[in-house]
Image (tube, rainbow, N blue to C red):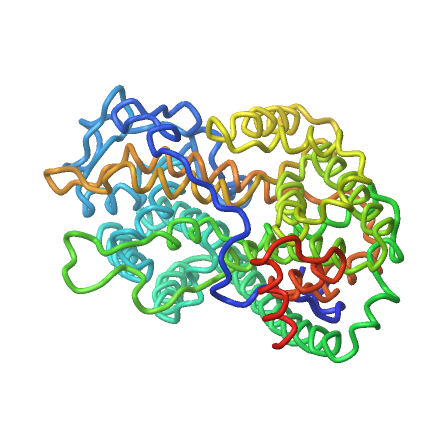
Length: 512
């Protein structure tokens, strides 16, 4: 998306601190089962990195098999052969390969995802490196046989880490530990040097693309501000250009929205879901694990995109002078929303509905009287927040099942209503303790957390099958979107104030 965004001129995003357009309120108990009954049947579907099979002699260590309690490191506790809790040190030892052991790869994902609640990634990497060099005697030139057995497993672990949690390595301390360990590995054999080189190049490439993407977003925001300023100076210029003049085909617009959604989703790292809710570890009196700074903010940028789309839809509706034109714009976006639903793009669908339900739009009663609202009523029913979004969750399950059995790339698309996904994860985090009374990590909770995040990991990897239309994409990302006050002013200009409160607000806005 870095190149894609760099080609565009800019877009308008809500100011920081703008309240979300769609507030979701739900009881915690309605979202998640109690910790002692959390299901773990989804573990085998968690993200996995292909092993070095064929390149290195990895043997059978990649099998997704759990060690029993008796075989594992002391301090780990199991139930029905599933890890449910353990001390932090024991869990770290459980991550590190040995001559005859490689950690279950669902464990790797789950622990790397959740461990940041207790320890900085760079501190974890330092401990992993120390254990690898100490336990496997990588620095001992006489331990060649041990080295050959353990080296491919360490490489595999590092590959899992760098590919799935690449943003951790924006920290110089992480890179120092990684270089120290990979240097020892690369000294052993030409095959290992080649594997280390490929892993390092892949990591650098991912971090470079991320930086380019973030730089492009900064330029987009700057250009967007300029366009909004220009619009305020010459408001009549906006009449010459609106969504319908760019494209009047709702199916095509829904496809281009899906492009934007999938490309922005692809830059969100799984760890961002955990870091968004990180709090002080009760066993650490000094600081939160992420009190210094975040390594990525793509989750926040994606929420801002939702808000931008909602404001853009409201702007497009409030801007036209003629009632007939406004009604036509509303019907157009209803059709766009319906196509988003059919595609499986629930985030754009909800953003459009949210924009239409904003007060400056909903108060346009004369305009709405000219709209055929039957299709809109159906969409609102599908996204009804009652019963913990029961209708939406049913539709999401259907789209997910379709994606699993899909024969075409289009059928694989699942773009969840992102704000609700975040809230689900938030309430899961809040509803269960990170540690048990004995101080052990409540790993049963983190299996469920990883299961939630792994679904997202599957959805974000889907390649958009639709052809890009640069003209439409540019408009969606760069067209000025009014602020809330500007929307109210445009709404009052279209259909005059109906009561004293609206009259007072109109007068106030006109004086600004």
